[in-house]
Length: 179
View 1 (cartoon, rainbow, N blue to C red):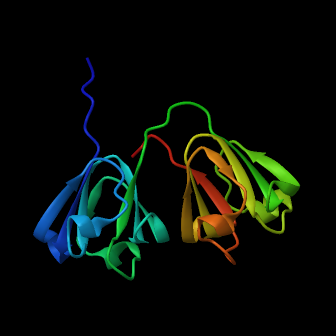
View 2: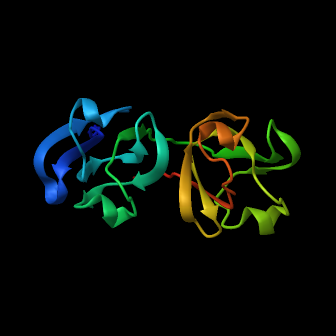
């Protein structure tokens, strides 16, 4: 029988895993309920998105199993304010991307990673999408660089609605089971 390991992230008030800590096994919309600040964390198992604002807003960062002794070590400029557990997904990955909001304009279906949406599909932008299967990361720049946004299965009529106005999404990657 395969043992199922609990998905856990531990947050610490200070850098280098010092100060008060909070162990989290699911989504947390506001870390200030548990810690006055959060400057380091340790992912024991699984994958998480962490955010620099409460309620899963602001800049987002993808963390997999490992130690993060300082929030700046993964590019964050401020303390972690909220986090979201990324569930394991087994099976296919499908996402339809649209050039304009409300599922308008030219569109394409993605089933695997795409390092440059504009080049591969001749889309000038990606302003809405429908995630049919799997969990995805979309990036501001080609080749999985720049700011990122986590997309769960569901309809996204406007990237502006999830806090990404003015941000062009240029590459997409599946979040695989290797977390």
